Image 1 (cartoon, rainbow, N blue to C red):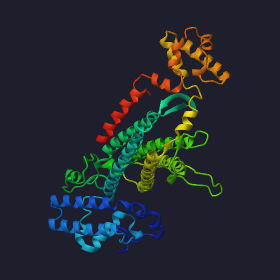
Image 2 (cartoon, one colour):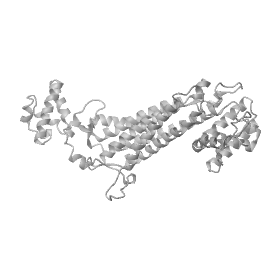
Image 3 (tube, rainbow, N blue to C red):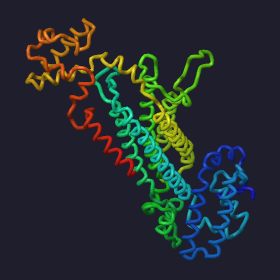
Image 4 (tube, rainbow, N blue to C red):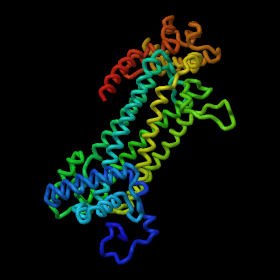
Length: 461
């Protein structure tokens, strides 16, 4: 056969070899062969159920497709670029093996709905993998909470020391971010999980098919409702790419933070050397390259979202060949995010806080200043006045190069007569942490409650 099954008798010339090379997608869409074969078997079963195939024909198609799948599994299936894509490869192999019975498989479908269904199944499975990895990363952060419960860390705003928090409060901040990611994955999956098969090229079919039968067989929630919309719809890809971009952003922010924490200047954390690399010239270097690559690869994921947005922005209804270009950026985003998550898990589990280094510099930066201000507010002082006075007291401590807890009472009283001896009960970073009371704060009791909540929630996931 000179040309692919997609070229009908209207053509009087073979496809130019340059177009074959330009138009092929088998180099990247062959990864969907399992979805294509599963969809084809479900489609053939449906055709049999409505009398468009006999049961014997269905069995022959099903068994032959399974043989083709086994060859693809074993990487023993021949690739021919003139057949363009994985869908044509599989169909042509079917026809070559069983003749006219194989030619019946494409009844009441087009490559438009076939490809859309295959991609939806692939994305659905990939989203499930992403969710599983997000859950593992949440559990990795949770596993640190008990062992690091006694560590007080400086929290930052504007990359300047702000207030003290206990380490598990940091870890659960990432658990919360990852939970929102999982929520977006679940929402996206619901919109992915509609079956395109049966809308055919653009308008539907005059043949008596049963789209509910196919949707149920392929574990979709329902068939799509409008053939014109379905043929061109790539919203589920855009949404997936957005969800992945947010996950990549969260991973990049975490990587940036731990890159800083691993420097001599911060000296907060020691990462597993299995995930670090050295220098070709400086023998002392232990570089956090995995985190740097995580941060860098997030740009690819975000760029892929822009590629997909630009790809679809001017397309009229319904299908246009431009949409062949939607899969490389989509696949790359999933591959990149899944790989980044798989590396993040052991890094989070295996890193160690440098407790002595953190403790030795904990009182730098006057992390307890806000606690002092709120202590004055509880004494009846207006917030703005308390804010101004604490600023002056901090300035006094800075000039003396001492922490607030070591500033003499009479010096503090020279700025605010309301201050008494009890102020020392809340000064110092550890005491300041103990003073927190609000829901969601770094108060040890609040953090303990959140650990218990996440332990139950993640165990049930």
